[in-house]
Length: 275
Image 1: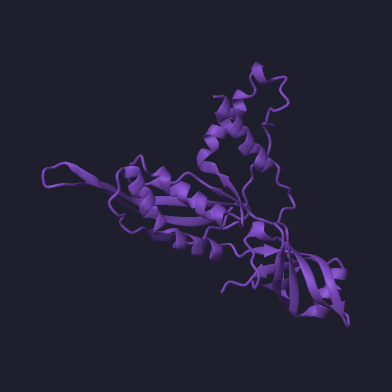
Image 2: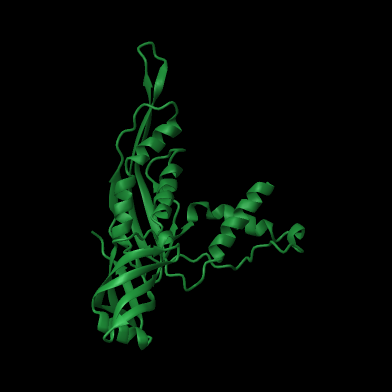
């Protein structure tokens, strides 16, 4: 129980600890609905959480485990925790900007038998849909369908399901990259020439999944009727990853406008160009 308590405390604190100004979007993964009852259905949501986390583009809130987190928060209200400095705040926000909603259409797990009727192993496959809900606006993307390959013969049903889900990883990664274009900001103009920015420092490095050679558009953001309206003003290219939090970029287009608007403290956004 102590290990579980500590794990939940670390999970909640890690989510609370992120700054409100962190430029990574907060994405929640809701518990999947399903058309078929299967004790292996939770593996699908777990795979989605894993893929989303591995993209390094988001702060991920695993809502599939949130009931356990809430139970722990309630438990910490007991007298045993009244004087503890480690008690998690009940009202701490675990707010997601987007929710990934999944629905399992099919979950097939079956035994492969030898001629004598003994079990030789297991195969599995699954099909599901995903859609993304913008929590603030309520807008939802169209559902995207995913179908795994049939797994090779495995020793257990669990391993067969996991192997089947591995086959869908590239498609899932591509889906999240396209659905959530990676955006960041210019933190500093490093060098300029003739009133034009030539190199800039952007927020986001290795921890964001950036790599040398990546290109980003630079957009100015205007508020029109209370809504952001982006317009492209330039383009930059990452030439050096400066640790987890920053990258150095050369300015390939729009240097003059980038410099003037940055010096005027206007809001600029940089969006990764998807190849």
